[in-house]
Image (cartoon, rainbow, N blue to C red; front, side):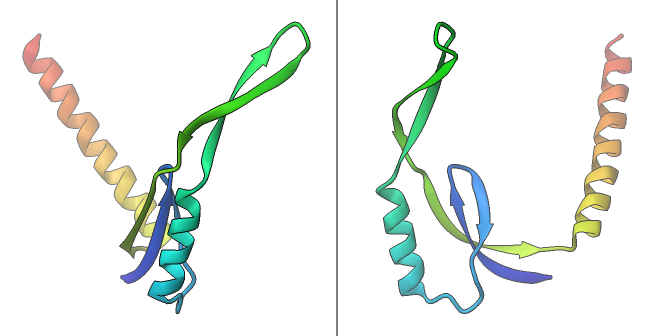
Length: 95
């Protein structure tokens, strides 16, 4: 497994470039925290979107272990099958 530094912006995770310094990561996170998200609503009369300020941005820096895409998909499929089987057994026991 490979460990990478990541940044999460409103729940979306991004891998940071290898070799990015702690100082650069702090600067990036600080800049992102100064942003605000926009919300949009639709005006059906004019067929246009209306934009307004919403909440600030949630930023989190972390280290995450990466697995290959194939390994992640295999683990996900296997664990989902076990979860569904467990839920089916629980529902059968309740009946």
